Image (tube, rainbow, N blue to C red):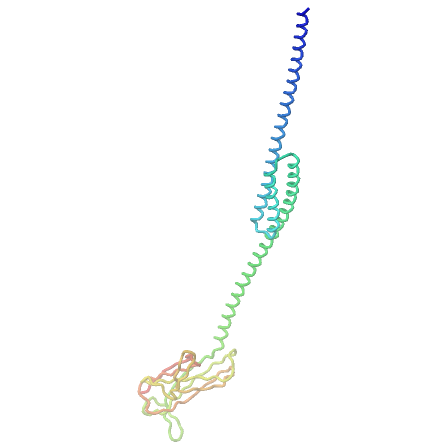
Length: 294
């Protein structure tokens, strides 16, 4: 009887132990499942946080690249980039729980939309700048062509002015000089003997010129004897840096037609040898000749 009671107690204990074992196994399984679930959740959250940070870094890089374009939107781009940097710093410091991560995702989406809108504006500005640059280049080409054309015109005008000035100059021709002996009766007899001569007659012709300016024209006549002395007035005048010693002047009324000029230079004791006669229009030598007395 006592053995039966002991067996019953033993069975009861074994049954209780078996029940406790089953309960323990169920509890351990539950703990293991919860731990795996938590680990999965943490890993997923960490991965999503890193993905958001990566997306934010890409946004920042986009703004950095846009700022290198030096557009007129630089201040706005800097402000938006600073928002991205601030959000990145906040996300790095956050605990990374699911609720806060969703908030950061939402803010990232808003920043991304803003970035896309600003990039469209930047692209439009670049196109406008390219158009302006092209127009400026075209304008520069036109201006450069105009400048070159004007330079050509200036050159042509200068050449034309020189041609006109040259064409307006009067031509002095047929310069001749002869020595004469004047008798008491007033009659003049040509001679080539120095001892008989008492005046020199100098003549020349001013040619017709339709484009020259009409009016009084003054010429300076220079007569140099064989001893290199200037005869006559021996007056000196200056034209710029040039000085001229002359024998006499003659003033002619010129009306664009051929004019013959004849002047006389009185003298005495003319030397034997060769004489040189020069005609100057101001400081410019326009005609010259020579003659000899024996």
